[in-house]
Amino acid sequence: MAKRIGTLGAAAVLTLALASPAGAGDWNAPFSGDVDGDGLTDVVTPGTSAGSTCSLRIAHGLPGGGHGTATTYTYPNPTNYPLCGDMGEVVDLGGDGTNEIVLTDYDAFNPADAFFVLRQTDPTTVTFISRQYGNTMPNRVWQTDFNGDGRRDLCTYTDQGGVVDYYLNTASGGLSWLHPAPGGC
Ligand SMILES: [Ca+2]
Ligand SMILES: [Ca+2]
Ligand SMILES: [Ca+2]
Image (cartoon, rainbow, N blue to C red; front, side, top):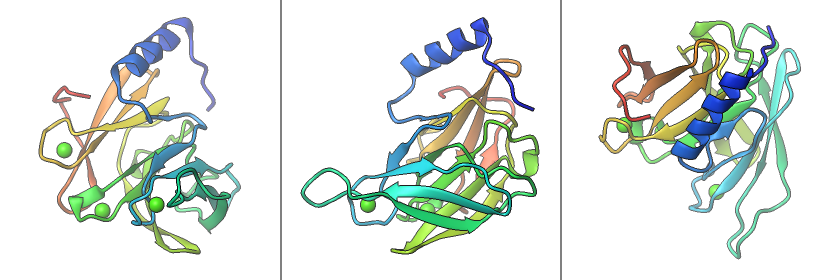
């Protein structure tokens, strides 16, 4: 299922990289946000896929600046496949003031669990929250409030057809894949 970024795909990704905000979730790249609600930005590093158990590492922000030593968190694989998410964003789904960790995977091939949502629920625990429907085989994910309602929405790009997909951050804490794409990603 692995795919390669062809010359045209790489050019398109570069164009998107220049047009979208910093901190976007590139493949196998760390991403940032406050996952424990202390007001300090943390860094989340996706783990490797490992069958029935998934992991990620979080380096929490320190009051004096910088980040502490990364802690590894494990959780049961929420997908039916040996995919644990290799790109993501920290975003407040539902706009309730609590941030979530939203992951997707370069090799995701089932729309029903193309995204899954986690939350750090205490200092030692990352908890699975939900699966969300989405497009398969993304190259990157990023966030922006494309409909201007104050909740930051998600966008993905896939070189499988060169498509940008739009996911509305809904009041109920889900992601709603919009067709047709409204623009703004
Ligand atoms: Ca934090
Ligand atoms: Ca939330
Ligand atoms: Ca929004």
